[in-house]
Image (cartoon, rainbow, N blue to C red; front, side, top):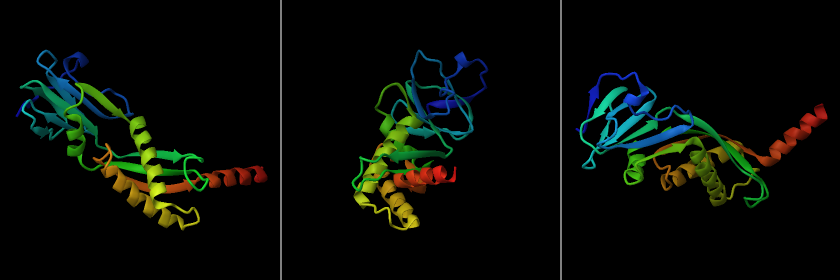
Length: 201
């Protein structure tokens, strides 16, 4: 084991932790021989340590820990689900319509994410905006693959897109996540709702 539990630190300069930014989903940092050795794990984070020989050790509980064999890479992953809305505008899809989807994203396989980060730089982060951009690309590909007809029953559209997006996520850099498509809307519905509001007003 290349780390051990240690007593709490109260000065931020005395420990390493992810940035206090709600848009950070994944943060990783290599702790070298000259770095502060203590790191903190919060209740809403899953954390893993990649030890010098490459073994991956999960951090079992929130608290403060000390790296005892450096260099070691610590990876923090936000464990709570988060909701994003992604959309593909008109003009990008055949059929002349745009589409948007409300999605809940869950951590499914942290090991997949960790494997992707082991050999990258010493420090970095994955933001909600990075994930949203990738989900937008995946949604566009899913709709193209399925050749969605907006006249199809909405429940069926949601089921089809849900299944296809998860098939595509597995083959993307988001492979450690699972996507729950909660609702789908089309651009012409937005135009219709605006018209109804104008007529009502």
